[in-house]
Length: 130
Image (cartoon, rainbow, N blue to C red; front, side):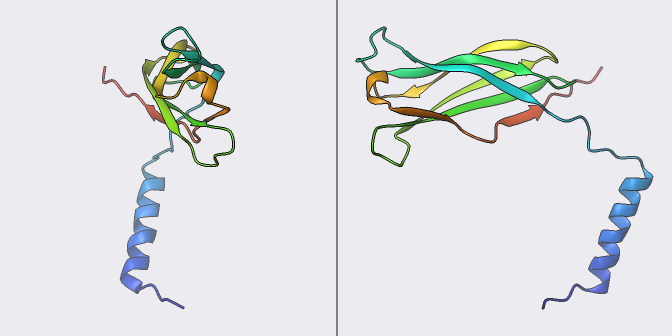
């Protein structure tokens, strides 16, 4: 069993006590929801290259956020993803919903058998000084 030095233990206890005494809070929770993601051909034909995911992202938080939306594509019988589509939704205000277009699949939509949203979503709070 590994022992923690007395110095390190005191340092940890002091940091915890100071953060509690100063009233530091974890802040508001960041809650974002991706709604109605669907595959869409970029060239019009689902048999042609390439494919993307379109949908809506909604901010259910009380503060503005930046969101990275990502999806992995799979072909039938292949357990490994064959591509990843990404989009960055910037400055999504509280209660706002916005369309996204996650591009990046070089495969045709017809060759993709399954699409999974990459979890967890990368959500960052936006703090703008007044």
